[in-house]
Length: 307
Image (cartoon, rainbow, N blue to C red):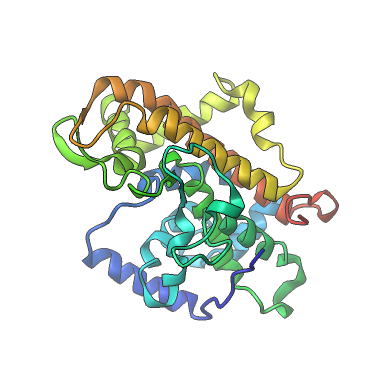
């Protein structure tokens, strides 16, 4: 597999420029939206073991106060910058229309056919880069801070079902429809509309309460019996392929099913899909924590980074 490189040594400057950019531009369609990525990263950080927690805090810039979620949307903000334009294909996977399957060799490439340039390849490669963290500052091949931020973001992306969607509609981006009373598209419904509707209808627009509900569902709620299986991963490459396969299966069964351009989606679609969205956010956070705990934890127990 290809290992991505060429990271900026001016990360701090880039982030300052990003802040300026964020204030003067309107947000575009983002994977899981800002809210979804923030919840994924907070769930993960809450599950970090002490050694991994310390490593993450050491890699984060001081101005975020050790909060990983503060930078989890950074890869979305810079993907169209010249220096980071090469990362744009890493946010998704295009699969053959109606195939409802993921095949790494067939599907993981950019529009020019360059192999490994998809979200599954990105998760594997940035995890591999972070596995060099123990080698210290003498290893200058990778920017560890950027690798952490990309991994955290792409673990959210790979769990968003419509980010492993059909090629012809760009994962639902070209399926124009109405979400209740306003215009949207199928991809954006899964990125953000379902999350915001749930927050408004059930949690008083308080995303912290929604996150607490999601965490409660896997700590001692309806998903608690599934938690151990979510964390299972003896071979990272196989696990990444599993995550992508889960997403395309959900996209077919719950995303695309019964939807066509021009439709109006409302209560029936929301009520049946909301549990899928929250479960994928939870799985992304739990699995991100699992990877970081193994990468930064006891090297003798480090199985995912060694693959």
